[in-house]
Image (cartoon, rainbow, N blue to C red; front, side, top):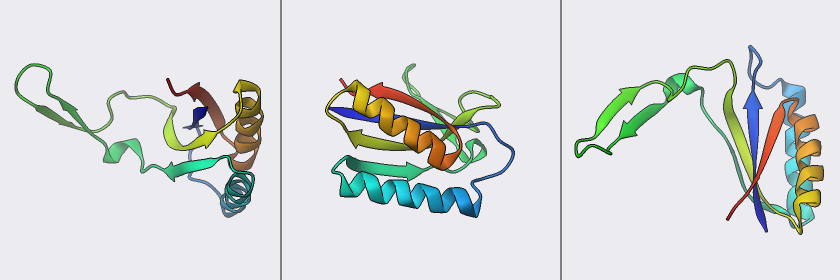
Length: 107
């Protein structure tokens, strides 16, 4: 089963060099153990553009969908046998990146 591990950023700065190194080690382990599907870091919310085309004409808005102190900074998509494995990996990812991590299964 696949899971989305969302990295929730709530700190003033970006990842430190030490955090980046720990994330690289975690990523290497995910790959070596067969859990890796895809991962990526995201630019800050100020770079976002929101498109709403529900009313017949696309409305384009610069900036994030929602102003918040916390935001999605990156993610992993992993393969795990069950939720317990996904939660264990999320805990290890949270430690590596020094951020909160939300776990959600794909349908």
